[in-house]
Image (cartoon, rainbow, N blue to C red; front, side, top):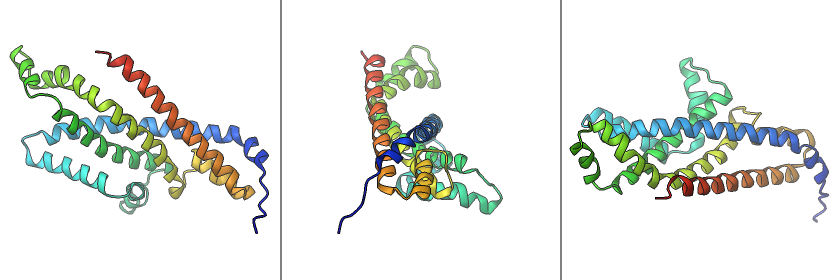
Amino acid sequence: MFNYTFRWNQAFQALPQMLDGALVTLQIALLSMVIGVALALVLTLFRRSESRILRGFATTWVEVARNTPALFQIYMAHFGLGSFGIHLSPFTALLAGIAFNNAGYLAENFRGALKAIPETQPRAGRSLGMTSLQAFRLVVLPQMARVAFLPATNQMVWAILMTSLGVTVGMNTDLAGVTQALNARSFRTFEFFALAAVIYYLIAKLVTLAAGLLARRLFRY
């Protein structure tokens, strides 16, 4: 018989703590995206390299990142590296795992964006006296950013949601960790996790909305 008594007041009283955790969640997601974009650009260049070693390294990274669970990647950063004497804090392990995942997915997004750019574009830059690197940076990269921007927004949302996996490695300052701690003290599971789900949803929608506005401003032409 359904006899559960909802006590939303406890959840709303803890809302400031949960919002503090949401800020940590957003911080991890943003840092992981910055690192992920930088690594993805390097992987993109490696995949275009004439070196089989560099191409193989980049391809392996992308394949592992895209075809293994994100939880596995976070576990490897926290527990796996610990087996070799490299001990990362829960925050750092979570950041490293998400950044690794982001880099793999973003590198594939960038590869698709590059395919949308005609080969004549970099050749036109070279004909104006640019080096290969200058042509990539000044001609190809801006067009690639335009094509890949909105797909990268989806990856940002995914990064926000992936932070919830931090509780499995002892992360207790992000939204999921704070919610878990509050639930352990009060056993009001439905109320706390329902409120956390709403906060995650609002963060994701705000990020999507902000990205859409930014895209219209940056890529008007």
